[in-house]
Amino acid sequence: MKKITIIGTGYVGLVSGAGISDFGNSVICADIIEEKIKILKNGQVPIYEPGLKELVKKNVGFGRLSFTSNVEAAIQEAEVIFIAVGTPESDDGTADISAVESVARTIGKNINGYKIICTKSTVPVGTGKLITKIINGTKDSKYEFDYVSNPEFLREGSAVKDFLWPDRVIIGASNDKAFKIMKEVYSPLYINEKPILYTSVITAEMIKYAANSFLALKISYINEVANLCDSLGADIHQVAKAMGQDGRISPKFLHPGPGFGGSCFPKDTKAFAALSKGQGLTMKTIEAAIETNEMQKNMMVKKMKKLIGGNFYGKQIAILGLAFKPNTDDIRDSASIVIIDSIIKEGGEVRAYDPIANQSMENIFPDLNYFMSWEEASKGADGVAIMTEWNEFRGISLSLLKSLLKSPIILDTRNIFSIENLEKNKFKYDNVGRSSIQ
Ligand code: NAD
Image (cartoon, rainbow, N blue to C red; front, side, top):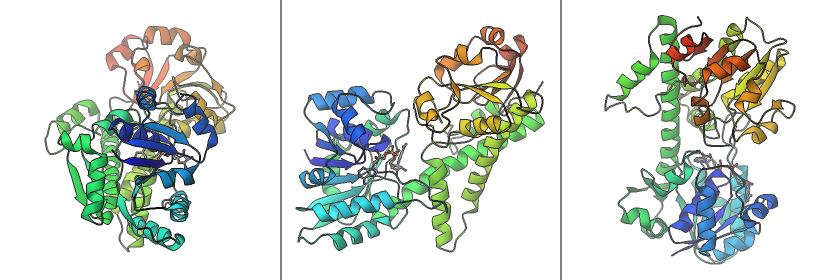
């Protein structure tokens, strides 16, 4: 059992903290936001993530997991310190690692014995060197440390499952001692023969960006194929299914939609492209994936506009789904933001509903009309756009929806309704890659 401190208690930090304590380690989750820590100490969880509340409760109950806003004391307590703070996009597309740098300085000032300093945040290749330099430059003690890169691959919406049963764990360490300690942290996974990859720090940093950018590329690719299917009358679902049955391709990340969002793909692709540019190399594939994604989000706006007669002015549009994907309250870079923004700018009105993410969206659009059900949001609307494939939307009765709307118009950006059912209910509809406007 190791004594662990996780700095940054967001989606990654909290899930990792709960998961690592579930592996039997003693974990302190630290964050500078007092309010977050207060919520956690009161037995609540500040984010929505299936299974997280239960995992936190279980490990707090066993006395293995605790929370603090005293980051300095938490650093002193730990043998292994994970950095899991945010690395948002800067104005120039590069990753803003100022929070990581700030944590490195705090670690340097408070190091009180040999420790492993491990970064879980997604950071540009070479950040490990920088963190090591910052800590060495800040500490005035004799204590040594080893630096490790341990990128995280969990997906919001299934983060707990992904963390407890990962495909693999990447440990970029500069020596065997550090790797061995990290392997002990993850010992239940090692015992269960999950692959634990030992790489250099720089290679681990590269793996994270290369993997995320490839997935983003796959999504942009299938979206472009879907758009061509739209034009030519082919069915993207059959195309994607057949592609996925080819073992070389795999069916994952071949779902057409309104463009990727969330806290990772948009910023990680941009950071990867910027990183490459900094080396005098152009990553044309990734730049194209980014551009395609922006076009895809705008294409959803065009499709909706066309469906309702060319202009949003004076129209009420129900937006069903605000989160960038189901089972999360995260709305960062969600495609819904782009369509909402366009409707408002053109003088239309948005009637918004998400089973979980209304509150998150209120931070961006405080003045929208938010509703507590899809039925209320749809009542009297001129049309509806499905932006997130929540399960409860899959079960929508199209005849009931039609009776609530002013006109039976639907943009199904997630292709959750069958064409047959839409036709049967005489909807004017559009989707992504299955048919054009009737
Ligand atoms: P987040 O914004 O949800 O959480 C970051 C937390 O760090 C916040 O609670 C913030 O208060 C805290 N913080 C910031 N500065 C701090 C400081 N100096 N000391 C202590 N706490 C501080 O971010 P996230 O989504 O958890 O992402 C964290 C990192 O993990 C990012 O680099 C991200 O790219 C990466 N990542 C995210 C996901 C994901 O699905 N969200 C998946 C894999 C990797």
